[in-house]
Length: 370
Image (cartoon, rainbow, N blue to C red; front, side):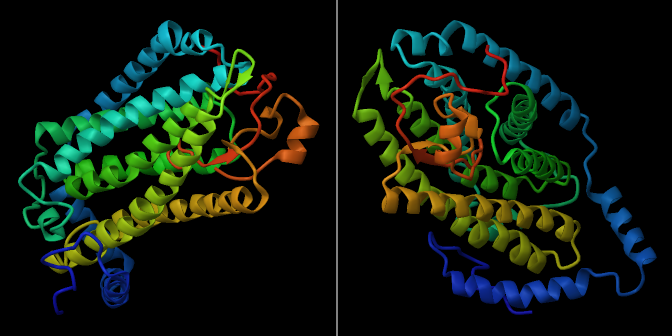
């Protein structure tokens, strides 16, 4: 087959139509090659042979993430008690904002560190992973070891997502997208663990770079908004800052997760890798997980669009739409009247809406107040 359009160099903004054309051509070929036309037995045997050849047995992928999950939890509890719960007291925030502030500020700090780490590995190393997609696969071989910087970023990210699963269940605000959020955490762990074991770490680094930036902007915007009411006085600047942050977040989400993820990550994993290794391992399961991740991003972006319409057309104000309906000023009747469906959050993919946060009603949360 001929070389894909962006086989040698991928510009900053690839032509999505050219990528779509390659997806159709090579995707159909991928389906034709990967399906077990000769029977399920030979297909399973070939898969088992590739697993034995390619997977690099490493207990670190089990041990260190569990250790770091506990470390993240201990650090979070400690910081909550000595700092994060004291900042709202110093600024005399209302009760609802005081309860929500520690979670958002914690996530903002962690995602800022991991995203900065991923920038260094993607752009400051020898291989231009973002602009030369071929470099993500040209040096791959079964059992390829990971350099220390990549290894430890993987361990930290996996430990953090294990912590996120625990925190979503026991520490954090209840959200309407709870099931999807949990699926996202599990899927991310699966992608990280799988790419670590088969040395698909270069494409994994690109995924981390494209994902974490949105969470930084989202959590920072929410953190700023919590300072809107201080000592019973409503200030205008936090609302302006949250509006600007949400606008930036929306643009980032569209560019990084909806545009670059398919034109850089999926294009590389579906098209470039298959061209370099036409009989290589794990194309189908790995790409299936990446496609599922992209579909989740599309799901959350739909709520962002609905939120933008509510803000621009109806003049609603910014708040986290993932909260339980009764989490609005402690009034379940008012909550039903003002509730909004949607997410990110994430924690990874949340959205903000606008509302009046001048009162400090009791916020119903499924969390442990740390």
